Length: 225
Image 1: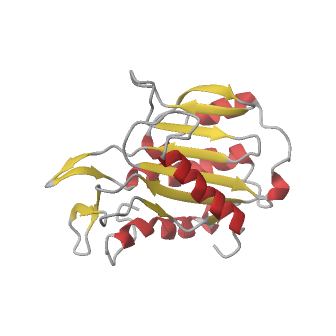
Image 2: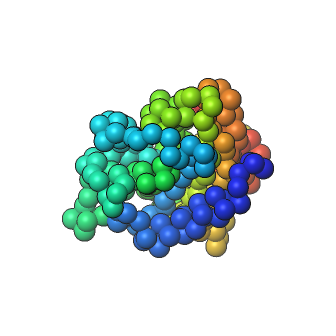
């Protein structure tokens, strides 16, 4: 969006790169990662405290990329919840609420074979949970249900080189589309959120279209909405 400060956009892209290379509050497994940052407007970052009870309740119901989170804990003055860890101490998703009220959510869509593609994933794994949980869980947590408050939402997909997304083709057939060779990370257009969801939902869905445009689809709107 034109009104998104340049520094917020650059920081979100820097964070996506950091997550890609393992610099995250929770160790992640290998595979494609959806990275989402929600950054409150500067004037709203210091408006009141968010209680631990409120954070724990919100994190207990969040599902980044449709992955359930557990074990909400204090983390260096902030809050962190992650999905269950495997034997190597790695997880598939986490949510981190920083001291500046920036909410970072990272989730890994499930990857598996589909037709002649080995590593496929479904964009709906992050799109649907975000559409469902943004107005009901995230907005109340950050106070964005108040029409006077707003935030910038920025998303990236990273570690997607060599994979294929499963979506509906222009002729209405669901099948895998390979990510162009050499493309490891893409960034979605920022979306300003806050107040009634009807005001920003369309902008968010339009931002989702970026991944379908990448593989050359003309009918980019998610077919399951």
